[in-house]
Image (cartoon, rainbow, N blue to C red; front, side, top):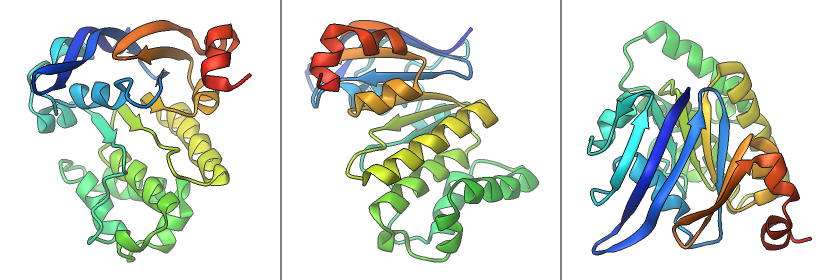
Length: 237
């Protein structure tokens, strides 16, 4: 059964809709990616799922719970971690303080301590910089911190918005490798919004193509990789 089912989602900013009748799902413990060019509406999808757009219409069901109209903090408490575009770290706080913000809704102190060690095992550089101000970290380290902060929530569903943006290729490969580990070891379902179609299709099991706010293609990621239109438009061959 899917952990997330979205049907007929319409959303936008002000009087204009960016998304038009968008439907997709994320399987329990699975990885789904939404691909598309700049301006296709990918970030708008994630913001609508998090309750950040009051204009959102349609059905959003998280683990059989209808979340339409719920406040963002209520959706977070249901186990949704969001890594926004631009990373969204608290620049004036230290690495450790950022992680504690991620865990602030939790009361299971022993499990929180264990999760600190878990994210430090994923990203050893963060442990080295745990007392360093987040604003002084490199771009790659800030992305690692943003993902780790979301993991400190102990999410069942992780929403990732362009995690590769602006990062060196080796850093991107490392982050995608760790995302696979997070999915396989912790069984966290992932919804990945990404412009790097090749990396996203390698990571995901299911993919959706978004163009001008509409889903124009969907299916198993390995099948979309072989589709001629996807290869020409998104993979460059």
